[in-house]
Image (tube, rainbow, N blue to C red; front, side, top):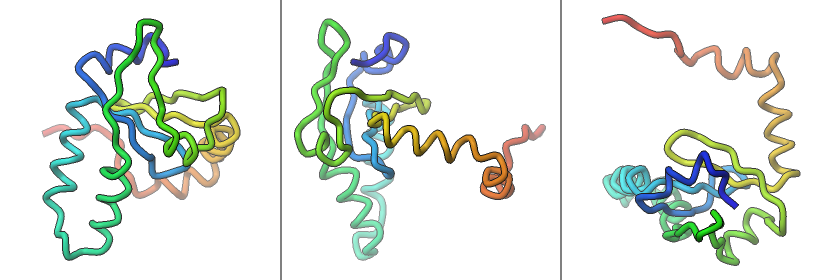
Length: 131
């Protein structure tokens, strides 16, 4: 079941694929096309680029939301993510992630580790810059 606040993201179409962590990614059609174009532009001779292509594209499926807000998750992706019944949906801007409650709890523990976050994010510049 996709929360109502995220359903409007899917109105123009969407794709479901394997995430980088043990989750699934549901991308808007427009965002998926951007990712697809960037992956397609990568050097096929690069083994890392080929792995990324396989990870994202070989597991990507178009999805539709039914009348009550559900999307169908195929068996391969359900098995990868360990989804059985309950799922956590976490918005990420142009896409959202689908997690098992146990895996999301692990992510939440990492997210809430302020000491580790200070080190992890120290090199990221999130400040606004004036031109």
